[in-house]
Length: 147
Image (cartoon, rainbow, N blue to C red; front, side):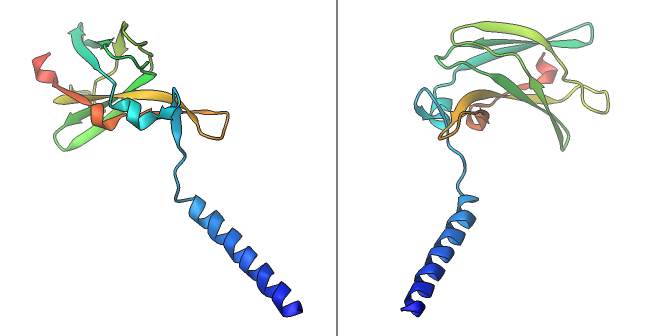
């Protein structure tokens, strides 16, 4: 009888230990409008234009989709190097916004190309917190030499 109780306790302990270990492999699910945010990424539709004036860059973004864009991740490329910066303005659905953006590389030169990724804000399932999700599949690239 004592051995049976000890075996049951051992099995429960091992099950709890495995559950806690495996939970680290399961990512948090982020939702927006009741569906996974990665599915909403497929519906993101935006256009942008980069304008250079007086040595400074301005980014104009037009959100053509029905999903609000929380911010934009900007990846700058030159040679084999890349750097990431943020455009922290939100663009509501069917709206446009513009603002200054730093596209100068760390070596004080212009990048060769720029890729812009939309970032969505969604709620974490089971928690009362929000997290951002970058839609890497919807990134758009422009050659800076064409600006």
